[in-house]
Image 1 (cartoon, helix red, strand yellow):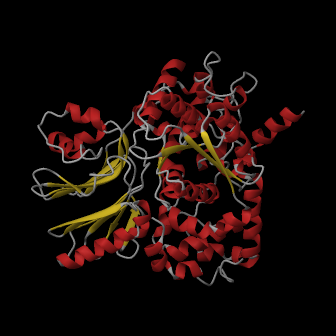
Image 2 (tube, helix red, strand yellow):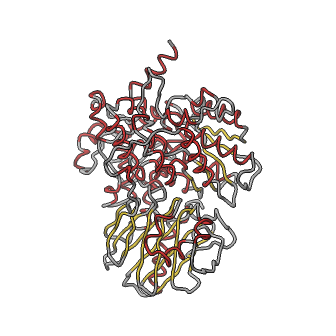
Image 3 (cartoon, rainbow, N blue to C red):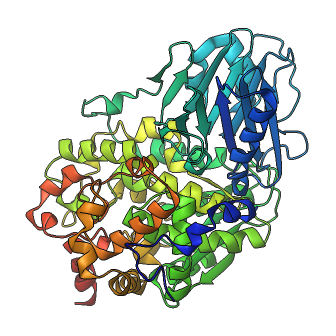
Length: 584
């Protein structure tokens, strides 16, 4: 097995055939739009179609394109709601508005019922409600949406276009500029790299308005404005709000399932989904809930997931992979993920492999547990938080950066195979409740009986009608890349050690002056990334020191953090200590 013989000097063979790979990559939705182009209409159409093709893995069910004046709006569709009539781009009944959306609007039925106009809907698509909302409220409508979404909307009469990304950046969106002054938007960076002189990640919770020619923040929660919350903890309210968040995301007209690692977050999602399906509280395409897990043979996650599945009664699929199979997929993972972040790649590779298996049995949507660790301080380094102020500030920092890490992983690792991942912990209303709780309630106090994410554990600790087995409800946090099997990370490090030599590391700062790799594993991933994504793509990936997924600011919490370059959860002493205590 060999990545290029000289990874410092030669581009990857995989990258050399980049365009061929794009065209044949296996069949979530993808949007692409060009505005203010100088191209002739037929040339503009061809360019938009070619760029949109790079996103076809996200939307293998159908594609559409609308060209108006010097603008083109394209859509690659994965049909989850209204598969029969929900083709995009959507056009208003008066033919004035053109809309292309990636994502889902979970409260679309409520919003339809609240409309004052007599708008006549053409489809049953959850996304079409955006059009009459824009007509009635202008940009103020965005805050009414509950869901995950990125979209572009063109208003012909006003000669105005807007682009919007959801509150947390659950769905991806990039923005770029052509040499002719054109403005472009794409669900993935690969749609822009050949046609844009400059591009960047579109920030979450923002709207771009061509009238102002600027980005403006539309999501401005009080919990992120610098104040420390003081709201009293209400465990019943937490439980009810999270159940509602899961229920919203069970809206689908196609077969769906749940990702189940056996940890607290995914197990709670699976438990609630199973309850609601079993008790007939939500309509379901299938008569049973499918659950999925992946790991190396004998990994912690596989055993824990099977235990949860047996308890819940889901139709469970346990998938295994080898270290070699994971390493073989690394290049594809980096191409689809569009990142060189070490932790993200480690965790995304098993998820990428599992998504392919899930796709093969006909599942098109999955529920997942991302976001809980950011909301409740679930990462093991939060054990070292010095006080509630620092604890809350770190939670906010983590949430604000989530679009570059776990949201990116959950979305792109699944959409690579035409699957949509939904994340209830990032529900806008649930965040409003959970992030306004006095952070003292989230502080970890092991001697006092409060381990990480105690609030969620206590909220669902109902012995009279248990959601989960007690040992699962109180299982210690594992990062996904650790939980699939510790030898996975060790195998990646060993492989990188053989592929990158000491001399290359000595000169790493010259080859990679921005975010210089500090380990051979990081060097390997950066080399692959650069072979696919030219300058300025490297600027879209965050950097800085991290310990077990911390932000750089949290490194200051403990002197030992500063001396450890590995982002694995095992790098935190509290993890090994906890296991030593159990075996003592």
